[in-house]
Length: 392
Image (cartoon, rainbow, N blue to C red; front, top):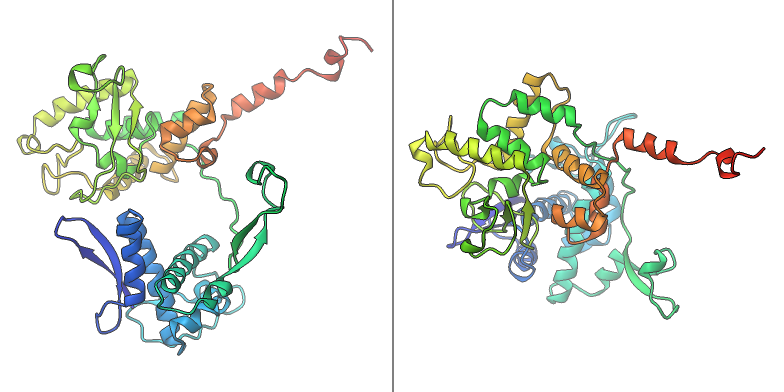
């Protein structure tokens, strides 16, 4: 079993699962088509689901189970996921399903990865039951009925009566691993280590506008409005800004994660960086025909749009030149933007809108207050003596 991309006549792609004879697996393909066509899911979502489902079907085949039997024994599958490395779980490895892990052996997959695989498998099974491809009792093996007493008060019903919800039976505890923000000093060091105006603009758009790599590489020149008044262009947003638009079929594989289009304000530094980059780009004739903002100017196919993975390579190389270890990542730059906006007094709702989050709760992980601000907050708390008016 292996995941495989399907290219549509429009150029858009989604992923499916093939068996050993390179035939489409119907139960997996039906679910993945529903994710793509029915739910308007992203290509990367179908890719992740396809790889996860391929792992599950591979385990079923190598342990002599049908996928319906495997759905009822996800506990065993979780153990296999945790300890079956590439030698046991790889697509081209005809090894048996049994795995022996010695004492102290590191897990092959972490809790987050295992939970992600289980999410895809549960989705496939529930879709198969709804489509009449599997018996209905499989759903009760995957989910248990749970009350809402463990939910926050705001998430419960207003009438005070007990509410019920479906809760997954199989799930590992995921330890909290916060991603640090890039410090202002690290961002300045990165900018100094950049070798071109294009690279400096890329760093600034992540650190001072909070763009994701896919959003950055998917930007078109028509999305960028740097005038003080863009109403003549048919845009009512005031001052310099850019629009993040989700588009399908970008040749560089870039994808805006958020379905909702948003306008991101740009400050003077970013506008100035745009001007400098435009002068640099004008010196490369092959770049003139492309509507993409960021194109190859120095290597590769000149004039072709920059791929998202090239942004990671850019940051890694700039970090090495700047002497930053470990290297600063695109996610840390995005965290820096969200944290700096919160430190400046923006509410969590404003931060969520700037970052393109549909839910305010999604923005909480991006907020890392500056240590100096934490110290200032503690120093502002009056002492017990000051609270008593200085009396003993």
